[in-house]
Image 1 (cartoon, helix red, strand yellow):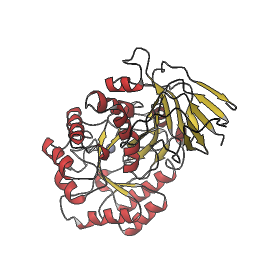
Image 2 (cartoon, rainbow, N blue to C red; image 1 turned 30 degrees about the vertical axis):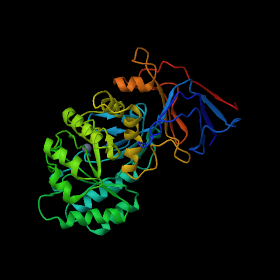
Image 3 (cartoon, rainbow, N blue to C red; image 1 turned 45 degrees about the vertical axis):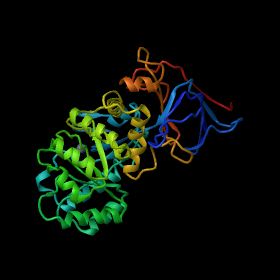
Image 4 (spheres, protein in one colour; image 1 turned 180 degrees about the horizontal axis):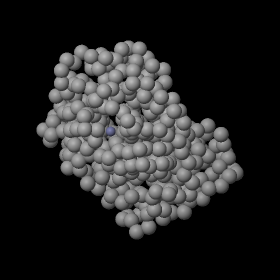
Length: 392
Ligand SMILES: [Zn+2]
């Protein structure tokens, strides 16, 4: 693959919550990965992208999507949703289970069906880079009666996540805890639906009490998806647990502000992750991940670099993925953007802090340009970029 130099970077967001912004002026991509930050001059590169003072950040990681078949979703009768999300800056998506398959009978699921559904989805939707995006599909809906062989089948197709949503968690705990162990033995992480009943109408209600004994890797949409747990439970989850906590676009705004501010006060933003929880009843939201980080900054008071790190590096690490950070050796999943004409301030940081959408000009996934010149989902940035082939 030809090498690429991105130069004249104005703002640089690392995706690492420990140090979310850095003074980096150029970035060299080689073989799909970041070869160097500020490589010494003269730099040899096959292609040059002059960012003209734009901002560079990692591709956004949507930790909670519900794919069905490729770019098609029946939830809002939409074709091409993944490509539209890529134009909103999302480069990696993680399925929170494929429950929207038409005809699925939530009240009569059995181990063979849920395992086969995850295997088929991993082997179809999860096999292809739709619009260039990295879609991790094949997240099993956990049900009673599964054996270790079911988890072997999931591991064999590269599943990274399993989900408690319909599983009855009110009774005997041994089987559920065994599932968590079987997942961990195979490198599969465990996510659980939290809060009230979902669009399905039959998901299990989950608050602090269940989370405290189950100890999942990630508590999904803790501020609601769509209905949040009680305020008291939410405070207890923040204060008394240590696993990853996810906030989604499908949530309750008041609970989101409550959770994010409490995590920030307690110095626990490193365990916060983001997702859209779409396609679903909330819609198909190409700018959903951008809107999440705008909410975190303009309403919850986080710094722009922190919010970007939560939307990228945090969410990737929660799911065991190596994307979401801009550091030597990391996959070159990159968003280049700038403030939109008329937006507050002179930088992307200013715009995001005010809650203004940035304009995306380029998106790269593994060093491949998948959005070139301008996004079809954001207004254009006010800075001009230039791209050319040949040595600088
Ligand atoms: Zn969901």
